Length: 598
Image (tube, rainbow, N blue to C red; front, top):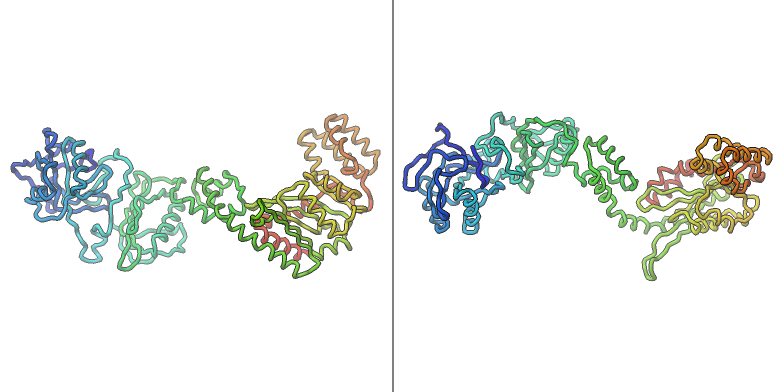
């Protein structure tokens, strides 16, 4: 068997048998009993005369491969194809063929065309490329006589060529066009059972006759089986009536699914259930859409999920490798439409605030909005919440200490949560107030402190203590609004910043001795030790007032000598899960957590 440049396969004459007839005739046109490797007659023709090889007595089949089922053919020499009409050609070829309707030809892309006035220039051009040699087919359609024939024979209604199956023309002859199924092709036992979509992936087994409610169910089963077994399945053909599944290049596995119009169902028609491929982690069936369906919610909750972590999770859960580009597309697709959903979500915020005030008029809820331009719809900017019970508890029962801190929200919209956390008589945390703002800066901290001062009656901060990190703008806002308050810096953050610049263990030890010193003389001794170890570290810490970071200079009215802002850090860690939720859901979750801990 050889393949011409026109994309057709020309077989040498085989020995006659009971099923085939080799027609050898001698007429004016001439008949040859062999065709050489270039599909020619052994002699050159003029530019306008063509040698035509006519196959007849069969029909096209498309499983297991696209082929013409008959080897019976006749060779016509020196045919003036350009001058003869289609009707003239039919009359010329009607001698051995008898009555028939149409002639067909195939292109190098394995596409089948009806020979008519419009397609005639195509076949002439192909003939010139092949040395003025042309192959035509008489198409006799075979229709099954009963349902049992569906598995044994394939009509044009039941199966169609998978025209995109072979991507190039360099395949070996053995991979092409069998008139009969290839050696080793055994029909599986026919079943008539409905596939259970709840079947675990490891137990999925495809069978001839298996029924699927829709094509989507079949594709889901193929994808699950592909990921579980590591078979790189892909769809060689997929249209409204049929689907063809193949495996890796060179793997003999083939599976055909067809649509049964009478019974409105999809059914597996045939399977070559042999594999010679190895496990492959690159799976084309794991599409961007599928990954969004599986991991979309997780990505929306954590839009900053790193691509490398995403790839590792995909491989752990799905047993597939996903490239960086596809991971980026998955994240982009998962986050698309979030803005519209968030707009609907934030539109309910005023109703949420109204419910808080309705439940207790002493609660405080403040919502700040902004507009990009005059006349634009207002947009959410900030919200502040302080519950009446927490206000009263802090005033009556807690130490006059507040920890101030901010933490990032883990949602698509971003933002930060500012909080004021108190310390009760047992040194346990008590959340007092919280606010969601666009970012940590002087303006947002000032807005938060103004509302907090009004709720807790802090006035100028006399005999009150605030503990915080060195947040942007917070120190300036405190000095303006609470000039008499005792303001302490968290020494854990101070020590971490100092260690980052001066990593010596001696510097760290001297710093902590100075921070925990209980009287001024001990503090001065520790600072001298720090100066002897690192002059730069000493100058950096000497720029700060000792009253903000050393116990030796703390005031006693707060009844606590804590040098760290652990109460705020504990609160931020406590609400970590809630910080991944949309705004209203987060506020409700924190409200419920506070109620349960009370």
